[in-house]
Length: 230
Image 1: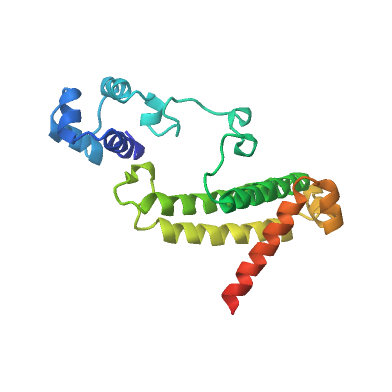
Image 2: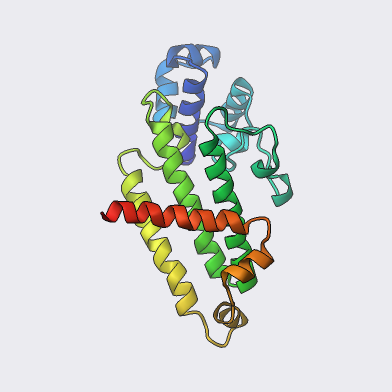
């Protein structure tokens, strides 16, 4: 089958709060056989995958790990919701989370516009990977704080994700620097990067809606860094 299938069917069962015995009975198989499926010891046939799809109300592609969406839908760029434009998506209580969220989202908007102007695919990929790894790392810490939350959501074991995430972040930072410093000097993207003129005035002019967010993020970050060095 594949490595995702056992993890996903175990996650689905635990999400539903079902015991192995109950799920096996509903699926008309023995508990031992279901246990083997969930551990990846044995592989099931196509008919059983379809039965699982109906039982958990998910797509076969989701069961096989081909899509992270339970309904099997593949998103295009246009389909991805923009939380910054969602007026109903507000944090309750303290103003601080909402403020910091806006600072981060608006600053990232500037970063992506700048790297798009560089026309450097390697740089775009590495910056994207770095930022996604940061989100992944923080989310997984929050998710895993409650040990009862089903860990089947993740492929990487809980015992190694922190070290692997940290190593990947370090490697991604090196690749970002490398993609700028050592890119082909005769390429248009190299020239775009080296000739890019930036200053507070230029940034404020080019990004009138987001510039103040970036400046506040920079100030907050350097204040945080300085406080750790004392």
